[in-house]
Image 1 (cartoon, rainbow, N blue to C red):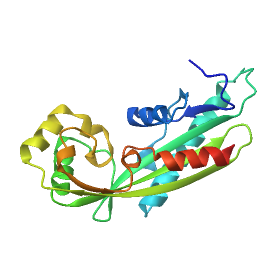
Image 2: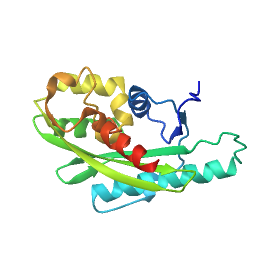
Image 3: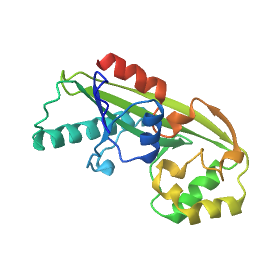
Length: 204
């Protein structure tokens, strides 16, 4: 259901359920379009550069998708496209989605009693004016020891296999073992609210 009273429209360029939930929590109505990019084909030294390059590639992919869809939209309002990307950094190494259960297990065992960080980017494009701006956000996460049986339960359940670094701090099984989060949980989940809000305002 589109809200016609809002002065602009939003497209969330992501298939992530967490991002969808966060944007809805922020009170926005939006439509969804996911990008088809080869994430493995984009490589950068620094995690901050990597997430910016990935979000940029997603935004470009969606912009060209929209152009081929030949939008016969009679709606005069500007459309804001939000693209985002998140990676986990552990001991200086960038971690993307685990390749398999074995890798997911290694990832989570590493966090046990240790710490990891997430680096997330948000890029906002005003499709009417062409204005585009992006920034990144970093969050540090510290863990208590995570028992092996909890790790096995997480892997069996499978959600950890589909997220960067196999890291889901809001998961009920993991929450008791999260010692401290320096930053915001929404950023770890893939969409930092304050930064997204700021960029939307700037794009308008």
